[in-house]
Length: 459
Image 1: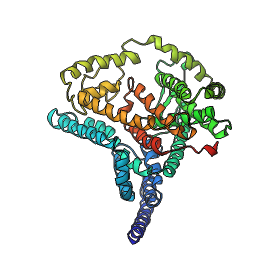
Image 2: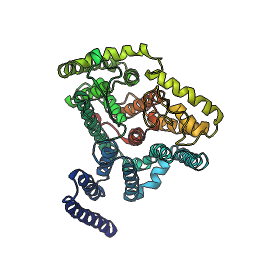
Image 3: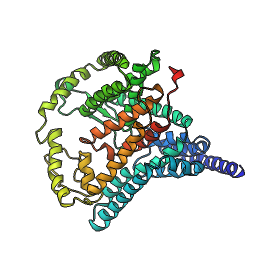
Image 4: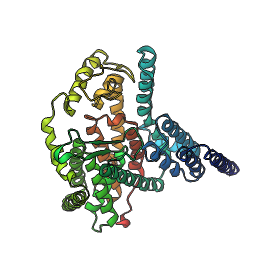
């Protein structure tokens, strides 16, 4: 007890000292540089008592909601939170290691293979250091799972974290909608995009596509709201609000694959929870869609026309400058490299094709490939793909085993299972399972699926 009190006093004292330094620094430095670091140490002081505060802070920083944090700063924040939580929850490590025995050994083997790929790529194949670091930092976010498992060591903490996830998702949805409506970038992560739709003209003129990192949280909240509305006799107004705002955020991403997979998994999840929920599902989807389209048509009528144009643009795919044509060109260069380096790949950070002038230029086009499975084969080889597949299979087992889909208390598990499956499908056209922000979100959702429960009395 004395040690714990001393640690708390030390943390609070350090935070006050840093606050004093920050106050002095603000006289010579701009506020937007001082504020993030001031908030950081305030969060550290409070987080020793309530570690979920540290999780909220790091998630908002990594997902680009808090300005001033990016790149290596976010990596330092993530590692610091992991060490902080391990010290704070030290007593839970042994029992939780036994509880997750089917998951962590194969994950550590996969991480070990990634370390080998880093060494092989940088020291033997001389891959560009910046590319090695960025790809390794992204995939190493799976280690954050140790932190989230400790944070959600029981049902109470998991349920509290679930509320945090939904709150973060609502913030991201609001920012995404504002970005789309006003064409302004309001999130600061590298994964954030605000751009006019390709070939914007006619009905698509002035329509901004808004993509924010943290889509797994948005998807989870969407399925949580959809399932809650579909399977319960008492419909609470906040579930309708969450359903509408998450639907809107998915809509303004203008991701055709995301639209299709979200709709398919909506039908699958409702089918799993029972036939009686089907009627409510279609009613909620029709009512929610009508409200969504009606609201958007008021604020930006061109958005409605752009939906049809975006869907019909599928028929224009195949040209070298189209989305599909671009991906086929990447595959054309990647496949020979995979065949010649099948076992261990080219190593993380490897470049596999020349910079092409006739394609849309972006700085990472020589080492980036949209097909996530070819990405793993290209960089980590067939061994890496097999290990990654086994890891993900173990994560899915957490959602699918030892429970009945139709029990309302397991609604969070069904929602997480839907998110995991959507990302498996999205990985064919976008390397979601190699994105640091996506991986970090999934590491939060996986232990939540194991521990969180809905209270049946809360209907």
